Image (cartoon, rainbow, N blue to C red; front, side):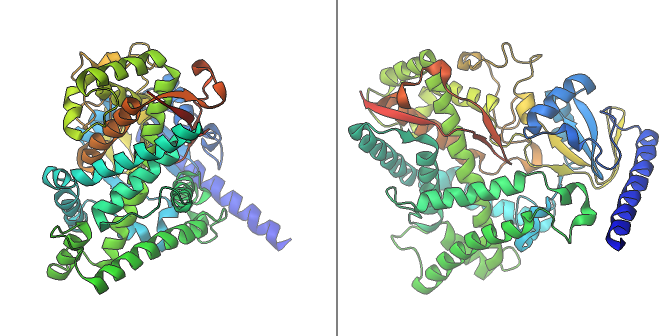
Length: 493
């Protein structure tokens, strides 16, 4: 009986608070949106594909829309114009993060460049990233490492080619991305192409992405924080712990063995030197958590984009043949692509842009939060509101894109639109202060990997599946994965 009284009291309190919130909503002139239910608000409208549900709702309520998700006021941006308003014109006001409860595991939000507020610590970590990992000079210096990893990817495909076995494209791309990053940071592979260790790490990263992207009752009802009713924070603590331990062991190994050798300092050398000389800028914990950010964000997004690009090419053979013809003409049949070649391959670049338009790696980008009341286009976005930018919906906006759902790389041949955050019709990496720092690496890697796979082999779908029958369903997490992994057979040219 006591338990029932507590539950009823809790529900009454929530209903009362929501009633007050509803009155406040009306008085504050929030953006339009669906009428919330008691307690739940609009949670029932999200479904298991929130990017699609919210895109559909925006068609009714407009590109600046507000919802009540439990106790949290959420504003959703669904047009290029509104994205520009929020990510450029009022970037600073919208630059804080809405931190999911899952990211409280190991206090990751206190160390991560992804989640830290825009302040001195964030600026110093961002500067370290831009100078030591993603600067043009550093990327040029590491180009030979990336070339070697692409060669290994093609060699791995060749073994499947000889045996006639289908290749799990996403897994092979993930392993390549993982070793590429680990060579850049630590001068060593983290996984053997022929072992299960890459699968284990991929599963671990995907588990992190799923848990972080899963609707969590604590995020909608912060009063449940101590209970962690779905166990999401508990599982994230285990997943994060495994990754942090792995990087801690690598750092210990380096500290015992000294420099990476070979005359070239790798990123870990630079970070440890900075840690020694300027401990106020970065410390050991920040290095471990920076690695966690880089590997979780960099491996999954790159491999997903390559898998979607290959899937679109296989579903649209005439587009794939057009890309292959360009490669033969510019590079020569069967040759690997180098980064310097990409500028001479306009159609290949268009395929990558069109893939990112239809399949942005992070459909809502990373959620933002306003620290104070902000006015946008005559509406009030109240303090502590969560702000979601639906990049998936913006890339499929029929008022901007002709035949928006069609895979049509040609649309970019005569277009100046770019993916670097200046053109808000296409913002797969975000824009403004919070733009993805890994963008310079991604725009080098994806076309080189894709072009090398297309130029080294012909491809067919496993089991003789016809291109038009290829399943293109999405699996929602923080990143947008293909629901059924792409399995394709490489064939000798």
